[in-house]
Image (cartoon, one colour):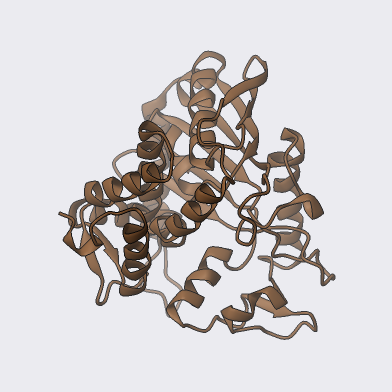
Amino acid sequence: MPDSDALRLPVATLQRFAAQALAHHGLPAADADTVAEMMIEADLHGADAHGLFRLPRYIDRLRAGGYTRTPSIRVDKSKGGLARVNGDGAMGHLVVRRCVDEAIMRAREHGVSWVGCHDSNHAGAAGVWAMRPVAQDMIGIYMAVGSANHMAPWGGTESLLSTNPIAIGVPGGKGGPVLLDMATTNAAYGKVKMAAALGQTMPADWMIDAQGAPLTDPTRASEGSLLPIGGPKGYGLALMIGLLAGTLNGAALGRNLIDFNADDTTPTNTGQSILVIDLAALGAVELFKQQVDLLRQELTESALRPGFDGIRLPGDRALALHRERSAAGIPCPPVLVSALNRVAQDASLPALETWT
């Protein structure tokens, strides 16, 4: 979101606000704290379309009974480094956090682990989850089935796939980690929703209508489909991620997918998967980090193409924003403040501007 005219509030304040709003609508306090923490992590990484921006939608579904308020999140199948988690219809942040923590534990024992889930829900920014193992000197590879179908198969017109994101977090040395966080479409659908909220038009390469013409009005998004990255390559990647994060876990894919944006009550049965590799199992953790730093130096100091002022590694912007926003607070533009104040009023909380 643009920072101009934005109200900046400390991380702890916004986390407290979100947690109290969720708790007001029946989420147990400890779970509300967890969801709020992981939502704010998305904002810290600059994934504004997956952070506080989503709170009103989460609360609409929570109020309507679309989430299990007191779920029994549990491992229902496991063998060695493999496990599957039953999310019991809980908020996705709770389910995926359990998956990632389970994967870290199993990777510590087995060197590598794969944990997926079913009966989950939308869980925010993919990069947040890929970075959680990085703090433990582990590589995290996260994949998810998106929460609504917005992509047609290559050559088709019917939206049968979602944006199906993938994120990869790799530990680094003094230069910091490397983080790839991407949708399999040219733009994540959250950016479409944000463009609509801000009254903006979309770039011509985000969406097409049923005739294949560019669709630039985000308020007409339901009439078109998102374009995959790299044409048929992005379509193929979205399909394979869907099979690994959805079908493999017994979660929804294709026509079975529920539109999280339009349906408040039907169980979404969202699927997510995390692969974790423990660097310590291969030895020489610090040497690996040094080699990442060396490659960073080679890439960033290499010759520039005309028109470019520098070379960055994936995640450099997001991780720099995380540091800056952790210190200076998270910017909340007027449109977001208005939406959150409606949340506050509904939950009998003070207006956001009064929180310190």
